[in-house]
Length: 634
Ligand code: COA
Ligand code: AMP
Image (tube, rainbow, N blue to C red; front, side, top):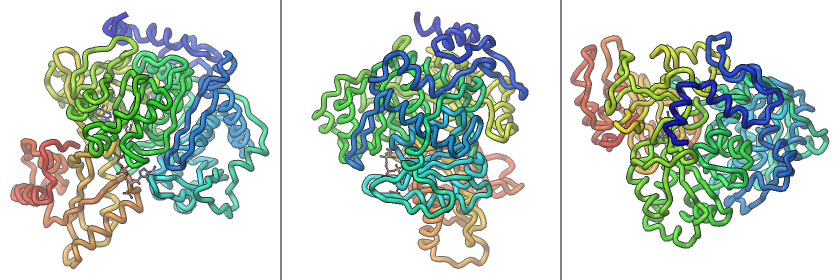
């Protein structure tokens, strides 16, 4: 069947389409109902079905005689470690750690927060939580204590699982002090903190709640899978919104498993036994969907890489991985390829490796800029697919569905809507725009399986943030257009979310930190173009009247504050002290106008502006700081 036939059926007869996809899974109790509404009026998939996601990821393959197939390859250039886990070995370790969690009182519905680097124990912990029908919340290891504390308070985990350290290039970063600090800052205290000790740095376990991973696991009985309802949450994953408070995206068990299994085949063309590598981190949605659950549910081999595209040890790292593990499909952020290109523009490293096993390279996390697309295609000779998705959807909204039908690529486009996603472009009044015209990218309801049904503990934030702007549609927060051939072009966020090296950050959150400095009266953070990271934050601060400061020192203090409060990944390096900021008469900073200045776009100066002279002044200042580029977005 061609893509168009499949796509049309998916949006015209979603229940028939997704019933067929659901039949591919080994349910505990297959669903009789396919699409219903929950008590919030939100569309839910497979509401009366029962399953266990860990069973799908592990036990079913072992029971089907594939226990000796490789489930996970761990490659860590930063520790010089390589290891493989068969499905049977992984199932044994997961069952054992599930028993350890059970011994600490974890049962169905309890939350377990996981703050781990890219080591097999992170995968084991996630699957063990799923095995018990509990809910994990993985927090990216690059976040600082305050960010972690916010997530602890929101998810109220009974147990935290961590490791003694993470390793970033040559830096060993102790995690335990960050966890201790976060617990001290949080109001919701966990009952227990399980620490996996790494050889590179041993954590001191002197706290009444600390437990050693190995000791606890060795002394626990293994635990079996607990079936849960399809609509029960599998995990909460926090992501940046427009405010300082991260949003807890909830993922259910049933829709998630059906969607991921479908996507592994239809989008990535992955089959049992294939080696699939998503070069991301378990702390991001890509890690959840395509390092852990997607490949394992599909019975493929997944790769866990604890390293960087460059510097561990060189720009040949990705190609070395492909050759060594015969990787069939890989997935990374465009920024990773920009980093490789910067160090090895002529791809001399690539020439040293045999990458003939590689069928397709997928990229996501930010728009794949045409120069990076062309470089990667030219140097590798492989099909390169830009695909667009969000933490909220959990799987790609638009892609080149190579498992169904490979469409001709158009650089700059994330190709076509994935089956199940009814993508439209609307004007501000909610009217559907003609082909070629740029507007808000929305998804007509119902969303397909796998997408978020709510925000943890705050359903009104889900309604207000996604459903209320255009009734009947989910607002993606991205702008763009669909061309005459139905190809979708995502041009960037329409809100205050920025994308730094494929990491999603809220400018509002950075502003909160800057505003907490005693010298700062007001501030504004926008994303500006960066050749390597796509975007980086750029701060503008207005000082309190009468404040005398050394501007350079203030800038250093503010940079340090953001690193300490959010984490180094915020990458805030540039801050400018300004005499005034353009505002409305009611005192609202005109952020959109500042973003327009930064990307050298035509300025839409609102009639409500308080002081029109401030625009020229700030534009000149931004230009003097190199903060005005034609490509900036966000
Ligand atoms: N734990 C602790 N610190 C972390 C971290 C982690 N897991 N990840 C990043 N950091 C730190 C880095 O050490 C760095 O700190 P520094 O300022 O002290 O040097 C800072 O956060 C910024 O990191 P990063 O954005 O990774 O920049 P970089 O210059 O070290 O590397 C790239 C640049 C392009 C190689 C890197 O950003 C990259 O590989 N990006 C791909 C991201 C990705 O896969 N995203 C997933 C989307 S699919
Ligand atoms: P995250 O939730 O961290 O996955 O970030 C989602 C956001 O990243 C989207 O809303 C987009 O702004 C951006 N994004 C991800 N993939 C792409 C892509 N292929 N093209 C353009 N933007 C993308």
